[in-house]
Image (cartoon, rainbow, N blue to C red; front, side, top):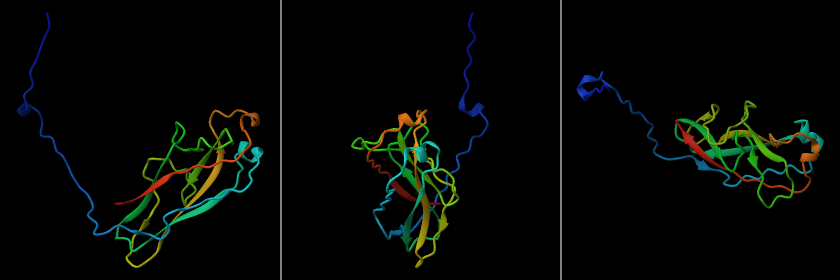
Length: 161
């Protein structure tokens, strides 16, 4: 024989919903809306040994509100969301692009990073990053890296808190 019970809302302990946010009067102005990173020529052994050069790039912002400012990157990534996949028009294979924040931590695409800057009106703020070509997790030997040209693209969103 089954046992059933009914619990009424007034029988539960009090529950609480806390809501908070940040109101800004304006967003930062982008100093540069499109950022290009050119790796030049990279050898497969450099990629295989995780020794490919890191290329610096910056997101420059002006007239920001007084808030913590960070950038969240999104794009077509591997399953760990730490390598940006190359486009289907790329002839190179077995590679992706990794992004590092200014503290040299790997950026996870789609997640809010811990590093950023505090906005001050009238000041140009720079969020600094590095990009590096890296092998995909399934690459086991240098034969799995195919030479050719590559490109990749991501978007970023400036967030405030």
